Image 1 (tube, rainbow, N blue to C red):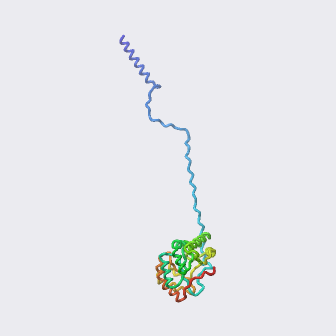
Image 2 (cartoon, rainbow, N blue to C red):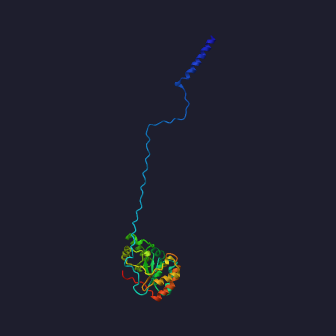
Image 3 (tube, rainbow, N blue to C red):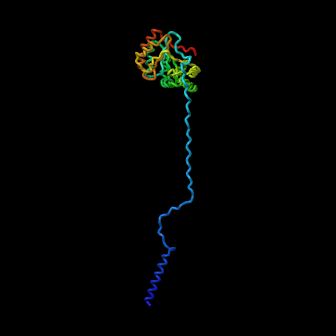
Length: 268
């Protein structure tokens, strides 16, 4: 009897264990979550629209220079004595020294001043006027192409320069305009006339701006001068030591041969 009871107990245990192993009751070990495929079509990201570009306005083309100098330029004094003109100042380094030489020689000249330099050195403008010399508008910043630009630009430039001169020396006449480089056009002549200025050119150019020696400058002036010549020299725009050194000799030479006069602002 005892053997049968033991056998029955063993069978019961086996049946219980085999029931725990059924597939529908199996225990699965948890693992990392598996990705789930989506059937939805991904929404494309919007492409940013290019930012608007602002093109710079194109500058109007420059007018061509005329084949020859236009008529109406002042190139002589109209009398036997010659006239001295000094361009590109006023310069604190050179203009006072030129003025000292002119004062010592008892002669006057015309100073063709650059507007921005007049604005920077108003005391020199006042001294030029105080010592009996004459002023001439030589553009705001010595723009060689100014006469080729739109008429409105030319007028604004010349008016701005006159304003700087008048601010430095109120009431001072500015009867002349000289185009940088002598690069004249009919348009700049018209504007100068509208502003009450006569276009001032020259007859003698020793090219002192190219820095030849003082002896060369004096020789070129001597050889080219004629009765009534307007002589171009420089008191600004660079080192004018050679011009300064040439002045005593060429002034004495011109005074002896023709005399030196102040330009008259006639013929406007």
